Image (tube, rainbow, N blue to C red):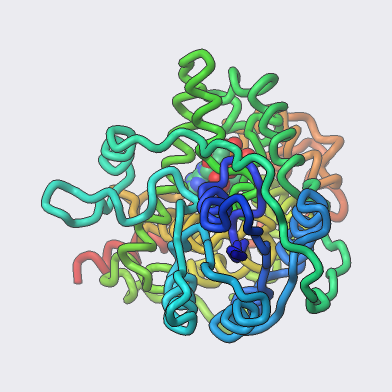
Length: 453
Ligand code: FAD
C-alpha cells in the first residue's frame, strides 16, 4: 500500500511521529508518498520573507527525500482526494494543526477523503494545544499557572527514526509559485540548517541565555523561531537535548520560552477568534488615532524614522532580516499602541507581512499582551519607555548602531537620546515624532476611562 504523508508545519524527517505512523501504515512492502500543497488561503497572505523561506525549506526537504516530494496547488479538500485516487493511497498522515483555519481545513479534508483514514499524529508543540486545562476543565488565561501545569504534564521523548522508508517516486508535481526576490537577509533554510543553528546555540551560547536573552546587541538567543514555525526542528528535540545536559538557570529559561510558544497556541486553540478579536473585549472601546497625521506617524514607525533609536533599530531590523529581537518586539509594539495610539491589529498585520517567523498564535497574542488586551495579568499601565529600555538593554548602543548608521559616531551615553548629544541630533536622523511622556499619559487616561466604564 501507499501511505500519503502531507507535510505542513513539519518540514523535517527527524523526530517526526506522523512520518513514523505513515511508514508503519505502509508496512514493509508499501511506500510513502510525501506531498506539500500550496493553499492560497495560507500562501496568499504570507509576505515575501515567509514565502521565500518556505520554498527554500521545501527544496531542502526534497533533497533529503531524494527528489520524491510532490508539490500540488489548490484547495487541499479537493487536491488530496484527487491525489489519493491517482496513486491508490490507503491513508493520509499529518501532524495535527492547531490554528483556526488549519482545523477547519483538516476537518474538510477528512470528510472529503471519505473512507480513506485521515490520521493526525503529533503536533508542532510539546503538548498538543487543548490538552492542558485547569482542574475545573476551563483553559488557563495567564502564563505562569499554565507553565506549571505544562511542566507537570510533560511530553513525549523524541520519535525514533523510521529506518529506511521507501519513498514513492514518479508522481507528477505542479510548478511551485514563483520565489520572491530577496527583500531581507534570511537564515539558511531546512532541517540541517535548523539542527546546526541549535547545536551552535547549545554549545556556545546557551549558558549565557538567562541574561543574554534580553540584550539585542549580542547573539544571546537561539534564532530558531523560523525553524520552529515551519517545523524544520521540533521543540521536543530541543528539550530532550536540554534534559541530557546540565540543569542550569539558562536551560530552564529556554524551556520557559518554549512554554510561551505552547501557551499561545493553547490560547488560540481554546479561543480561535483571539487571533483577531480582543481577549479582553471591554478594551475594544479604547479609541485610536486616525487621519493623515496619524497615518504619517505610522509610516515613520514602519520605516524606522520615529526619532527613538531603539524603536527605529527594531523596525529596520524587521525590514533587513525579517526578524526582530524579542525585547525590541515588545518595545516597538508598545510604541505603536501606546505612543502612537494605534490598534494592535494594525501592528500585528504589519509584523505578519514582514517576519520570517510570523506565526498567528505567537504574533497576535504577543501583540495583545503588549497592548494590554490579552493575557498579561497586570497590563494596562505597562508602557515601555524607549529611552530607558534602550539604556538598560542596549547599554553600549551596539544594537542601535548596527541598524541606525546615522547614530554610529555617538557616544553610548547619547545613543538612546541623540537630542542630548553635544553636537545635537546627527544629520539625517529625525527628531522624536512624539513626546513620550505626554503620549504615555494619553494612553493611561484612555485605559483608565475604559476600565471605569
Ligand atoms: P529564543 O529566545 O531563542 O527562544 C526560543 C524559542 O522560544 C523561540 O524561537 C520561540 O519559538 C519561542 N519563544 C520565545 N519567546 C516567545 C514568546 N514571547 N512567545 C512565543 N514564543 C516564544 N514569535 C514567533 O515565533 N513568531 C511571531 O510571529 C512572533 N511575534 C511576536 C510579536 C510580538 C509583539 C512579541 C512581543 C513577540 C513575538 N514573538 C513571536 C515571540 C518572540 O519575540 C520570538 O519567538 C523570538 O524573538 C524569536 O527569537 P529566538 O528564536 O532567538 O528566541
